[in-house]
Image (cartoon, rainbow over all chains, first blue to last red; front, top):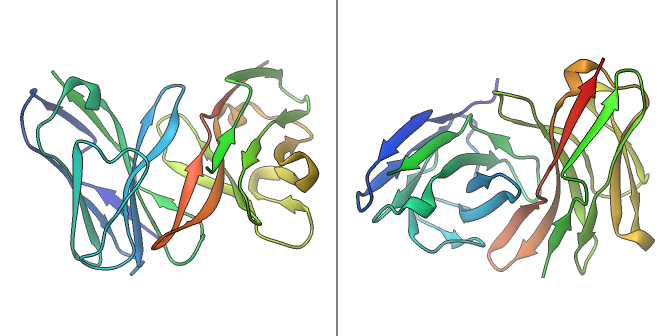
Length: 112
Length: 115
């Protein structure tokens, strides 16, 4: 079965730390996405990627960067974590254009 | 700009009653529309999608949705709700953007089911 794996379910970091969130998919999907989910705001797109070493900004990229060195792996980086980045982070992948998204279980990040 | 509006933050229905969750979208071209469900402690799962053709689409778990272009709506329905349907529901639109496409989500509607 299709699987999108996020490395951590819960993460607690301090303000100013550099944070790496890892996501791996085993479906050979071209497209990968990072969203954050906040109550009352739904899912908001941070970054997405359509191929290895390619990245595109989503709707809220400020304070984040991404890396995609291999097709199956898409990393989200918080260069200097801040308390307003406390959130649930969801990784997703899809096979093709406007196809369904397969989601990971999410990483609940708390920045203290 | 593309957007999705789900007017109801939460809805409570009795088990066995019918359900309709509202969704309105804003998109200049023909939309790709989706409904996802997030059950407590679980990841998001696709319920159904609309790309073209018949405007009434059937999904999993007995859900259906109707696309109405004139109203820019894609409401989700179920004739008889089960307690296991309690979850958060997200409407989404697929949008073409420079470099490819992205999926834009609404804020979600939380469904409570009472016995």
